[in-house]
Image (cartoon, rainbow, N blue to C red):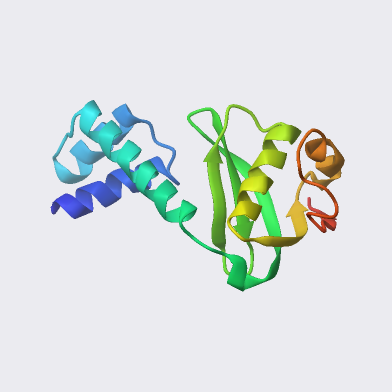
Length: 153
């Protein structure tokens, strides 16, 4: 068991596994006969999240040109994680934990994506009918986002 393997396993149980810390300890004990402390697991998760945020914030997507994005949310420990993905390359344009997933929160999230140089030509989601609601109160306008909503299942 290498330290790198242990870290990868902890992070895989976290996301996409959605396993909390104590069950992660049990899993590691059973699989590798090791039980890192709660603090060790928590610190590793937090640092990995900070590192991912730094990497994502530093990306410039402007060379990609106009894209149709997919947006949806998943939940991590009960907190909505807003995801914006470019579906052709599967590039994660935004992964942002938020207190809610309301329309104005989504509007601000799409503004963040635009600040990275993404030119959004369209939006694919399962509730695209709420586009007018999430634009309300934000700087997102039809002229700044030429959104053509595609309704999903």
